[in-house]
Amino acid sequence: PPAANGRFVSLDHGRLYYEESGSGPPLLLMHGFGQTVRFWDPYLPAWTKDNRVLVLDLPGHGRSDPVDGDVAYRHETAARIILALMDSLGLAEVAIAGYSSGGITGLKVASAAPGRVRALVVVGGLGSLPGAVFGAVMRSYLTREGPDSLNPARMEYYTRSHGAEKGMLVARQFWHFRLLEGDPALTPERLARVTARTLIVHGDD
Image (cartoon, rainbow, N blue to C red; front, top):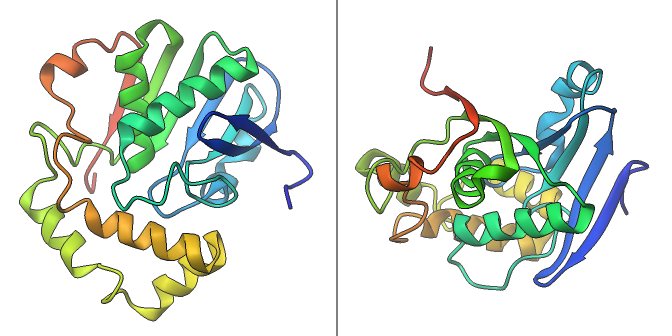
């Protein structure tokens, strides 16, 4: 069931779950792949003082419906769903903070609809730059972390966070990133469309 401050929005692809708290300018928070709204809990007490914070379960994660049953999870599709959510909630403009896959999705949203993102924070979300696929190091990691080789603790987390069936789909989608081409590619031409004030956080420092 949804949390006390949680809601479902029905969009063309299915239901998207979000939780809302605080007041002020809207701030949209998007977690990393395989995670849920709970990723952002430690930050909410500070951020809700000055912002209307909306925390999403990205498509196929947590309480949100998958886009479909395909193993190919596309950030481009996720970005379109985020824009549809904004339309549904009457949000003309938002700030976005995204971690990892959520950061990639934030860049996709900000480059697809520049006028609708006033500020953007991307944390660990540059793994696709500058080509059409993830780099060799990331692909090697993804290959090792396939659903048949995942350690039991991670599969237990996926099952607890998303349910058994959806948790396995998330694991397979994560593994499939090693093969996916053309997404989440963020070319210089695509990044040049971003007009939002942007903070990039990446690496150990």
